Image 1 (cartoon, helix red, strand yellow):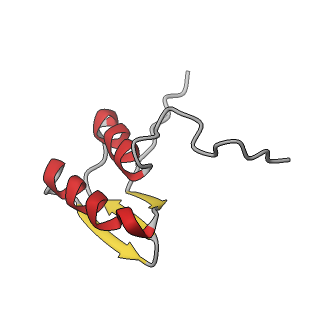
Image 2 (tube, helix red, strand yellow):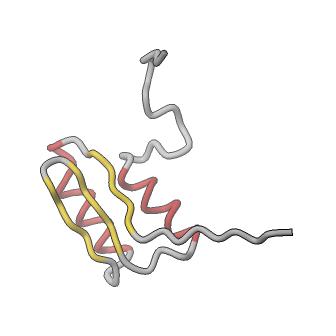
Length: 78
């Protein structure tokens, strides 16, 4: 049996312009030990991301509180 581990070093997500400052503020409030960078509309979080609960919360905040829902809305991809 082979054990596999995934080492997550960075999470990036495209964010609407109106919510960028709100999202960065929320991530820094929750996890001030992580590095938050902004490149255009893409917010990136890097640092110690080995805890899956921390990663899930970061995804939830970055996605605009839509993590676990259909974030694509009614778009149909083929």
